[in-house]
Length: 112
Image (tube, one colour):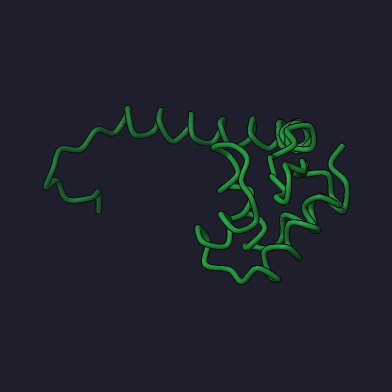
C-alpha cells in the first residue's frame, strides 16, 4: 500500500522530475543537476527524500553515488490507482460511444 511518505515525496514537482530523469537508468547527482537545472544541494535534498520514501535506490561506485528508481513503491501506487483507472476508462468508453453515435465531419456546426 502506498504510504504517506510516498505521496509526500511525489507531491513535489522537482522530485517527480528527478524520477522521470531516472526512468532511463541510473544517474549520478551531477548528471541530474545538469539535466534538470537544479543546484547540487537541491538535487541532493530531493534525492534524499525520494530515498527515504523508498522510491529510489543509491549505489556507491567509487566516489559517485548512482541513483535508480525502485519499482516496488510504484507498483503499490499502481495497485491503489487501479479502481480509479477503471472509472476513468469507463468514462472514456462512454465518450467514445457517444462520438461514434454522433459523427461529425470537419467544418460541421455543432447541434444547436
